[in-house]
Length: 122
Length: 213
Image (cartoon, rainbow over the protein chains, first blue to last red):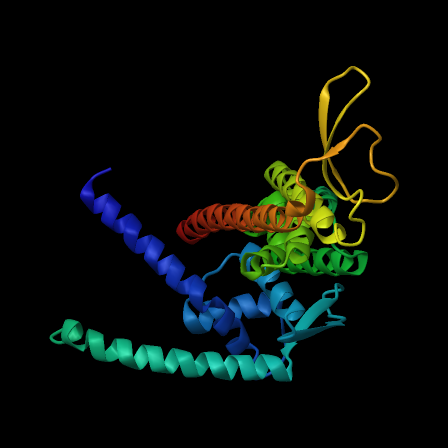
């Protein structure tokens, strides 16, 4: 493997890790305005944040967030003939989202200060 | 055509259901129903179930083994990783063991470790209650060979036996016993960390593949 290919792979890994780290907050944020079902959450993440995450990652995570008490769910019949499982935030989920947003804002503003010299002239 | 696609979906969900051992039946029903609904909705274009769409959606979910382990072990193993309670660790290991051979061997190793730890601790604790018969005893069996046994002190002391440690069993039994429990806990947590790290690596590669396709 040459140096450029290795650098590219390193960048890919870093970006994937970064996206994965944001996934829990992204799901809680997607549900902030109201209930959504799995596929809607995936589409919301894709359209609003460029977070293209596989279904195999999102559904188990939704299940984990529910078991931790951050989400609750209900089945609703759809026009398509198959029921949909809608998720919404519990009060604990809302608190968790706000805590995470606080940490995110602090982190992103301090990183912004650190990165300012690198972005000058771009 | 649509029938073949429905069969493909049911076959995938059947494999997943078979691997969700140890999860409550209501939860399994919920997971399967949710994923069926997802596959059907995502694969239906203009009211038609497309063969390629079904394949792509199933591929996006990943193979049934990985998906089941994602549902089953993550929360349980995450709890084990931060826990120092043997009961919590064993509960998580039972779940892991139901999924993989590696988990089974770690569970067996941990059970042996905890059992040996308890075998030393109990005689140490029971010595003051049964001073005549609890402790580490040596005796000759019927073929004349020397036999060592840790006795809890219930029943009579062996007729031709000798209490090897006497009251020393109290400190020695506790140090060795609690040492074994601690080592077993560390071993189990180390295995869980190693396993979760390798799973994260696999998941990461899966994500990279998904993003590039």
